[in-house]
Length: 125
Image (cartoon, rainbow, N blue to C red; front, side, top):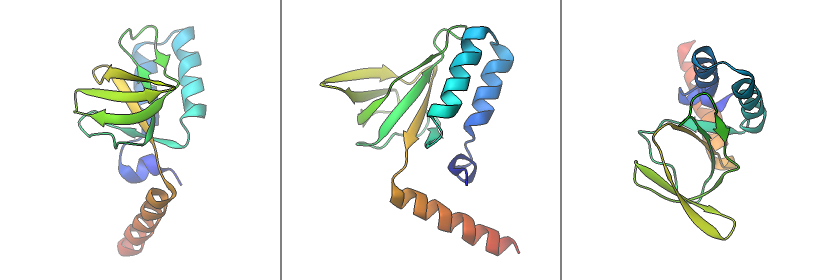
């Protein structure tokens, strides 16, 4: 089950869109790495707040010809413009502009999404 599709925010659309506009060897390698390493994380559009305490990673598209995939950190706060992340023993402030954030789900979130998907599929029958 792909949680992104249940939430309606498919990260593969982002990857495809970025590569169609800014394809080069570096970006292709970064997107390949992102597809593998972000498998258990879901894309969160920038208009939504990231939840405090959750692990996030982001794809930095500030320079679209040199995409960067962050190693990630835990959300301290999010004011919809910037996110404060706890990385090792320091707190970093990261702007949301030109960055795509991916957040980890808890087992409770996954269970909720599973039952929501099942209920929706039963209602469609």
